Length: 74
Figure 1 (spheres, helix red, strand yellow):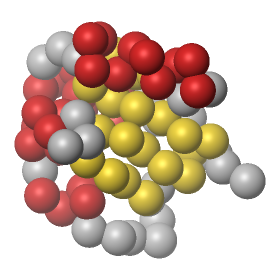
Figure 2: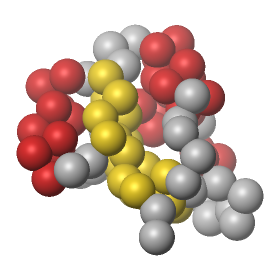
Figure 3: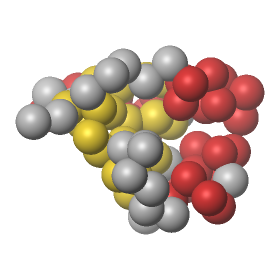
Figure 4: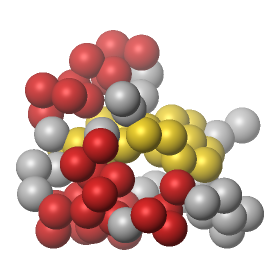
């Protein structure tokens, strides 16, 4: 079973750590791309804030068996 990670600005993702989510704080588009690139192996689901998803581009939310499943927070 895989783990869950979240990428985004600290105020938006920090509370998810209380639920056991691996939080990767990224305050800028470059930091978001770096966080995405260093996702640990075994991550099955990535929760993205809307700005993080925008920084990664539309293709990241398209299902692809080679990447973790992604969801965008409303």
